[in-house]
Image (cartoon, rainbow, N blue to C red):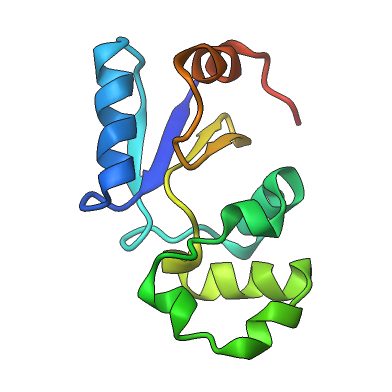
Length: 122
């Protein structure tokens, strides 16, 4: 099982997620979105699983810089934007063996554990 946590090291939510995983003895590999941005096909998988709205990092400067036209974008347009600028992606994105599990870190402990222990969906 290969658990990946995609994020940026300075993000408070990513720090919280990594601390939780460490405290619960969950092994993972950290992927810095700035150094290793996801491919367009990976982003498309995330959008298909979570939806483009759930993946939007609406608190970042990249999102604010998009302008009002973003309000009318469809999932394909968001996928292209996420692939072009990973700072638009809500963090962290947690995957296991390529399957998306969690975006953001606003779940309770039971839900996190359930998602981490569920069989990988392809």
